[in-house]
Amino acid sequence: MKALLIGGTGTISAAISRKLLERGWELWLLNRATRNTILPAGVKEIHCDITNEADAAEKLKELSFDVVADFIIMRPEQAERDYRLFKDKTRQYIFISSASVYQKPPTDYLINESTPHINPFWEYSQNKIACEDFFIEKYRKEGFPITIVLPSHTYDERKVPVALHGDKGSWQVLKRIIEGKPVIIPGDGASLWTLTHNSDFAEGFIGLMGNIHALGQMVQICSDESLTWNQIYQVIAAALEKPLKAVHVSSEFLASAAQSYDVRGGLLGDKANSVVFDCSKLKRLVPGFSAAIRFDQGVRKTIEHVLSHPECRREDPEFDTWCDKIIAVREKALRELSGKDLGSP
Image (cartoon, rainbow, N blue to C red):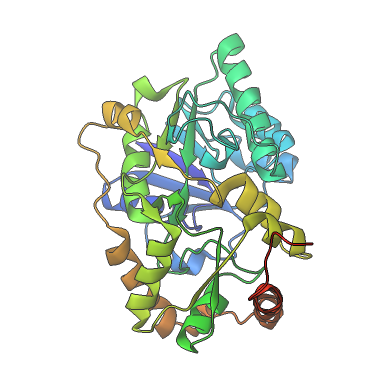
């Protein structure tokens, strides 16, 4: 089987690349070759910037594939470009959407592929929905061989997943735990969340590749494990062998107080909501699929990797200062309210 991945070096795509090569696929990657040092041997590469459609079309002119998957589409005009490039070059095209497209706030705690795709809080999710609509229309009118995959919060060895972080990733949150500083957990920390290790995601994804029953389908790929954000942070602190000093702050307050971070989209449009995924459709399409890595197991290995690889530890003093300010405002308000009759004028 012959596959083309556009990207191929990100959190979810790198794991897929490794497993495809292990299983004897002929794997091609189309990217700008900025992170290809992490790839195993055996990959066939097409070096180009796919935003230059004419150059990409020229380099793809003599090629065709069993499966094409694009991991870097964010906007509908990019979906339209890929349709033009690959409509006659593949038996299956996989678009990676996002579980953040599901209705916010949710009307049911259990989410499956029939849950409405409506997210008024996050432009990222709205653009993914527009891409889905475009590909579905092409499937209905022309038989374009689309499969739409919906990942939720997927992590790898390079970044520890948290509910709230700055523009430079999650290391600053870990650093606060290590230094004994308080850490902000949005809301009361009791909402449910699902975290999926990228190697588990890759198993489900590869099971859909070349799968005739997946054509025209939307399929979410997630772990069956659900944890509260309190549990997630407790597991992270335990792996760091440090106590957790949690400070709970309303998600709405955090979204209003954020200036340079997309907290409104990332929290109100995603992580502030409880999510439990029904993955029965994936299991019907990929018999035997089961996420094998519990979060406490996966995140321990991630933390070991981050602590031993300086390039994974990007300091973010701006976010650190912002957290201190938010916590100070909360503590000041509690001090001012302490001992007062809140019902009196």
